[in-house]
Length: 343
Image (cartoon, rainbow, N blue to C red; front, top):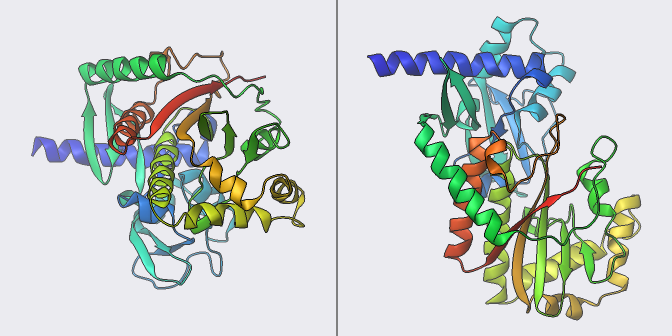
């Protein structure tokens, strides 16, 4: 009974924090959205939101191309005519929302209510908890200490310092930062190139021995679970491809080439294929693969060093990093981490 009362209190606090996030995002914690079958969810072609038992799209004809965080959902709700007028209506809506994901042929991939997709840290009575896959986990001090030690050890042993451009985060989004690397020697920018709905990386760089696949992310917070999932999905797909037809790697090049003549960024990105032939591009993947998580600290207070991991408060981010290091080791693919400097 005591545990049940605690769970009810935590559930109440969860929806209170969602309301806080919706009302005052600057004074709240972010929440990620992902289904427990993360690979099917993250490689979906579209996402549809419905309410309760209704078969109708809550947003009419609108379908999300990506739905990886709660802010994306809140923004769309605010734009709609169905925006709740008060906290009570808001919480009622949150409890009734269901998320469905589909592939390119409209086949069901995943489905579930909002709480089945929520991921975040919740503090209740000065104690910290994880909420993930509709379950609560108490975060004890010993666990946090072990997590910090594990991540610190990994970062110190595997720190990689090859991305040399600063990120003016107040004026540049992720795409604009990545775009700065177009035209650099031994570099191809692949941001938003997603064959099979899998992004191989944002920036590709290489030397005589290694091929570096950089996944760029602003912030070391709860959204880290999403990018860590994307890295293992990409690593698995490329690894499998190298042992078979290289079909996916060819698709990366073809998708990039097709972008010529599109909007400014895509035209620039596509023209990178005028420098490298398809065969030359495929041969790059014969080098030793090194996936690199490239993180920008978006804290406004001061610039924190990722090597001092205890200064970063998101335990979900640290746990996601820990899990990723183990998964990458399990498939025998090199994995490093770097920190992008902020202007």
